[in-house]
Length: 592
Image (cartoon, rainbow, N blue to C red; front, side, top):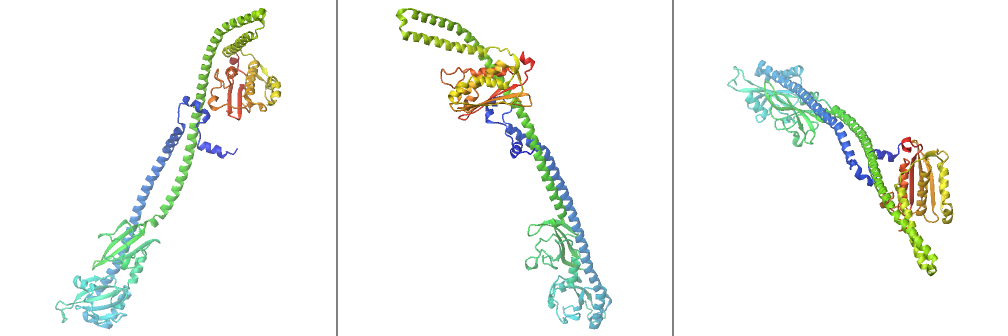
């Protein structure tokens, strides 16, 4: 069977109170079941979800720390390898120049043909050299071998010349120079030999120009990943080799320069765009000459953690779906448990209310019996005296024609008769019934009761509708009491409806072996203020002298005696429906 949306909503957002149950509020154990329901859901969810969320958070922290450590270690390893390669590249060429200048005399080096042979041999042995030249101590280039015509140029104002002059060797930054092409210089200083006319402490410099493209390709071979970058900068932050992502104004790197360290390091930082990056760096120095190069390896942290982020995304989805399922199960469980408690409390409240009503009716019954007994004797005396006086007036000739006096006496007798009727009803209300059980045909009984009102119904044009199926079994109950119950309710309905209205009586059974009798009219109805009082003795909404207020109280007592129940539903201006529920078979202890 498909569950309707209304039932689904009631399961998720139950209503624990109805306006019709407001008179039971004082008997409930808990007065705010919605708060109890909410607290139950909160406690269940906190118990189930809080450990899950905390453990997931701790797991994320540990995993992220582990991945960060691994990222730093891997970046540091790549930087260290690149650092060794660059250092070896420079040291190898500086050593070649040192060997050359130590093994060959100044005269041979300044010989152009011999210098070209040396350049050719260095290219074959090491590669990466563009040209080779000899610089005098005044900065004048005295010999040159290479593709450019630079012989006679003076380099005395060049930084690399001053550095080499001071420290004996140098590695320049990448610059354009006279050739207007980016290049870098490695140079070593040597003294003139003793037999030379310039041996009085003067020196010359052997300089080689290196191909920057080879250095750039070597660095690029250490780039791993799409978002990785590797480049050289000088101590002022000017890029010496191209950077893919971090080139700023005036060819400066957009990252902050790391502080000096003798060894290779890696650290976490933020780039100019606020992205988290892992930076590995190393200050480049050779064994022969120091440099101004800083090697930097930069990797975008998100790219390095892509696999882990995807895994975390999947875990988050799984966690979210699990949390939703747990929340739904916890809500339904809390709803089911609180509804069970509420229904049990509701039945307890109804039972307590019925017990209170029964006690009140019992007290009123005892009081009514006492009052009726005390009133009956004076009433009998008044009735007999009034009858006697009336007989005297009818016998005596002088009062025989005094009709006014006779009417007054008749009024006294009528009033006494009405008082007698009330006291009899009081005694009937308080009397202990003796139940005599016998099989009763409900349909036949209803027809008999309605036959009492057949003439009145025809006169007032009131329609009867009786729908009692033949499947209704014989009811084992007290025939007389059940007949009085139906008769009281039908009388009550006839007093409530106007001419031309209808009265409907039908019955049905359920699996609990109970029969329910419905008596419905479309009369004036009962207001909500009076609905909870109609079974109380002497309560009536009829005009004074039109009712005693005991009919429904007696009916209520009869139904209770038959081990049944009576309820009423009414809407002002639309009509009233009484429902009498009786067992099909009365139990023996009830019969006694």
